View 1 (cartoon, helix red, strand yellow):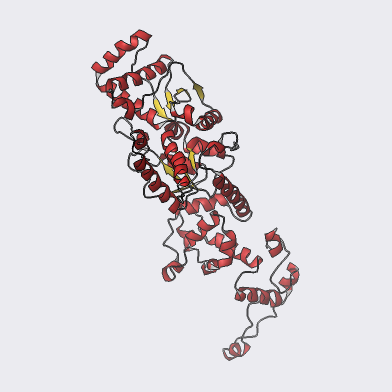
View 2 (cartoon, rainbow, N blue to C red):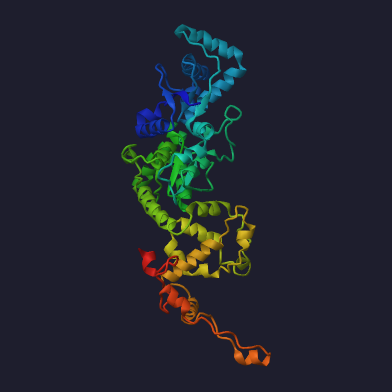
Length: 457
């Protein structure tokens, strides 16, 4: 569905126009033809309307959908509440023909009729099932490389079943796949499937609402996430506005919150000011600053490694327990070193020295189903470490010996003579050192070897 009506709902235009702006930008960038239809009312919201009159709830929902059907379109909404209302009403009216006919008799006064033949999709559902994570990744111009992002689905994007059935209601993955397509690393956390609790504010339970907000934000923060991404304006309100309230109470919580389309717009190259990120109650400056730093770290990493292969290696980790060194020295975790590189900690990896525990036995390479292996990465890390002068003294001394004598040891002629072995031919001596134009310090200006000076530049 590339041409459709958009249903913004009440909350986004009234309270969060920056979410509307970012979503419009994403629709345009992804080539969607979007129609905005006159005559829509509130979806309506379930807690406040359905509790008063279920018939009014279904009538208003059917009317909104009938307006879309009259235009021969489907509908996409960026609001979980509107999505749940429409899906629940559609399910009810499909099974209760008496209710449907009673409502259609009312709608006839406006020249409308609800048939239930239209497609109803959430914005995230449209991205996942119509656009696809792969196609989204292809449109990214500034990936969120190295950023750690936690995902909050919200209840009404996934439930109630069977009215809503586009992802697993208890173990969903599709929004994570979209975030990963932007280049970010998805952070798992204990309360991922916990309700935001924002509806408690609507019924006068302020402290309960804040308790829900506090618990999830502290959980996300404890996992080292750089941001929390949501796909519902009510959830955004809970975690952005109520987090600001917690901060005013001197609570140590500081998690930038984004609606999904905002992250996508950033990854597609749109500037923060263009999509109004300064309008958030909780500033997102820390996220943007970390993103710039990690983007530069990734650029530096790309000077020495194929970053796409590192990402693939880090996301797989099928060989995590195969390294023979790990079996005798559990402190050596080569997969953790790959992750550290992607987190921008190249300098730390080179300085710590654990990389020298790699035996270069190529077990990882032979067992890698993608034929990547980590041995080549560790070989390059060792060269970088030597170029910086932070390798083991034994390696420095051995290389100096090699440049000076052309060998790493002198033959024991006495032992050879006892065994009846003839003297070896004269060796090449310092010919390699002279060919490379190097001295015995272990640095070289020859092509293919990185000097300490060149690496720093």
